[in-house]
Amino acid sequence: MTLDKLKDETLDRLFEAVLSLQTIDECYRFFDDLCTIGEMKSLAQRLEVARMLRKGCTYHQIEAETGASTATISRVKRCLHYGSDGYALVLDRMRD
Figure 1: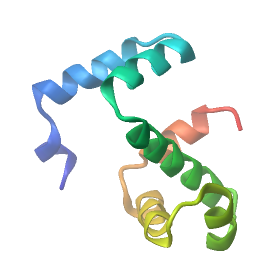
Figure 2 (figure 1 turned 90 degrees about the vertical axis):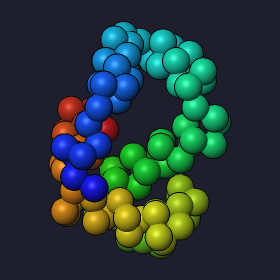
Figure 3 (figure 1 turned 120 degrees about the horizontal axis):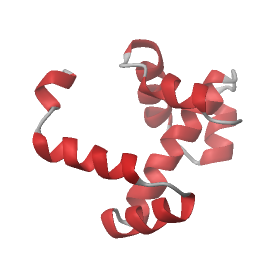
Figure 4 (figure 1 turned 180 degrees about the vertical axis):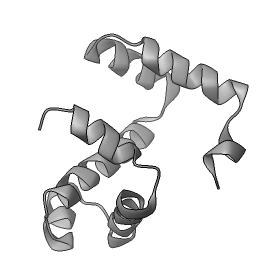
Protein backbone atom coordinates (compact mmCIF):
# COMPACT_ATOMS: atom_id res chain seq x y z
CA MET A 1 0.00 0.00 0.00
CA THR A 2 1.41 3.37 -0.94
CA LEU A 3 1.49 6.16 1.60
CA ASP A 4 -0.92 8.25 -0.47
CA LYS A 5 -3.59 5.54 -0.20
CA LEU A 6 -3.05 5.32 3.57
CA LYS A 7 -3.31 9.03 4.34
CA ASP A 8 -6.51 10.31 5.88
CA GLU A 9 -7.68 12.80 8.50
CA THR A 10 -7.84 10.30 11.36
CA LEU A 11 -4.26 9.17 10.80
CA ASP A 12 -3.18 12.80 10.51
CA ARG A 13 -4.76 13.43 13.94
CA LEU A 14 -3.02 10.37 15.39
CA PHE A 15 0.36 11.54 14.12
CA GLU A 16 -0.31 15.09 15.35
CA ALA A 17 -1.06 13.60 18.77
CA VAL A 18 2.23 11.67 18.73
CA LEU A 19 4.12 14.81 17.68
CA SER A 20 2.56 16.71 20.59
CA LEU A 21 4.14 14.38 23.17
CA GLN A 22 7.07 16.03 24.90
CA THR A 23 8.53 13.47 27.30
CA ILE A 24 9.08 9.73 27.56
CA ASP A 25 6.58 9.69 30.44
CA GLU A 26 3.94 11.34 28.22
CA CYS A 27 4.64 8.68 25.57
CA TYR A 28 4.18 5.89 28.10
CA ARG A 29 0.87 7.42 29.25
CA PHE A 30 -0.49 7.99 25.74
CA PHE A 31 0.56 4.63 24.31
CA ASP A 32 -0.71 2.83 27.43
CA ASP A 33 -4.14 4.25 26.66
CA LEU A 34 -3.86 3.75 22.90
CA CYS A 35 -2.30 0.29 22.59
CA THR A 36 -2.25 -3.04 24.31
CA ILE A 37 0.97 -4.03 26.02
CA GLY A 38 1.53 -6.58 23.26
CA GLU A 39 1.15 -3.94 20.56
CA MET A 40 3.64 -1.63 22.28
CA LYS A 41 6.13 -4.45 22.73
CA SER A 42 5.74 -5.45 19.09
CA LEU A 43 6.41 -1.90 17.88
CA ALA A 44 9.43 -1.62 20.19
CA GLN A 45 10.70 -5.01 19.01
CA ARG A 46 10.54 -3.97 15.35
CA LEU A 47 12.49 -0.80 16.05
CA GLU A 48 15.11 -2.79 17.94
CA VAL A 49 15.35 -5.28 15.06
CA ALA A 50 15.91 -2.37 12.66
CA ARG A 51 18.60 -0.93 14.94
CA MET A 52 20.38 -4.27 15.17
CA LEU A 53 20.17 -4.92 11.42
CA ARG A 54 21.75 -1.55 10.74
CA LYS A 55 24.55 -2.45 13.15
CA GLY A 56 25.19 -5.60 11.12
CA CYS A 57 23.86 -8.17 13.57
CA THR A 58 22.92 -11.57 12.22
CA TYR A 59 19.40 -13.00 12.22
CA HIS A 60 20.54 -15.44 14.92
CA GLN A 61 21.83 -12.64 17.16
CA ILE A 62 18.64 -10.64 16.66
CA GLU A 63 16.42 -13.66 17.37
CA ALA A 64 18.36 -14.46 20.53
CA GLU A 65 18.35 -10.90 21.87
CA THR A 66 14.85 -9.74 20.89
CA GLY A 67 12.82 -12.91 20.50
CA ALA A 68 11.70 -11.69 17.06
CA SER A 69 10.78 -14.31 14.51
CA THR A 70 12.71 -14.64 11.28
CA ALA A 71 9.56 -13.43 9.49
CA THR A 72 9.58 -10.22 11.54
CA ILE A 73 13.30 -9.74 10.98
CA SER A 74 12.85 -10.27 7.23
CA ARG A 75 9.97 -7.80 7.07
CA VAL A 76 11.95 -5.13 8.91
CA LYS A 77 14.97 -5.79 6.69
CA ARG A 78 12.79 -5.38 3.59
CA CYS A 79 11.51 -2.06 4.96
CA LEU A 80 15.07 -0.90 5.64
CA HIS A 81 16.04 -1.60 2.04
CA TYR A 82 12.87 -0.92 0.08
CA GLY A 83 10.56 1.00 2.41
CA SER A 84 9.86 4.67 2.99
CA ASP A 85 13.08 5.23 5.00
CA GLY A 86 11.11 5.75 8.19
CA TYR A 87 13.34 3.48 10.24
CA ALA A 88 16.45 5.21 8.90
CA LEU A 89 14.97 8.61 9.66
CA VAL A 90 14.32 7.89 13.33
CA LEU A 91 17.41 5.75 13.92
CA ASP A 92 19.63 8.48 12.52
CA ARG A 93 18.05 10.95 14.95
CA MET A 94 18.20 8.71 18.02
CA ARG A 95 21.12 8.22 20.29
CA ASP A 96 22.44 4.67 20.18
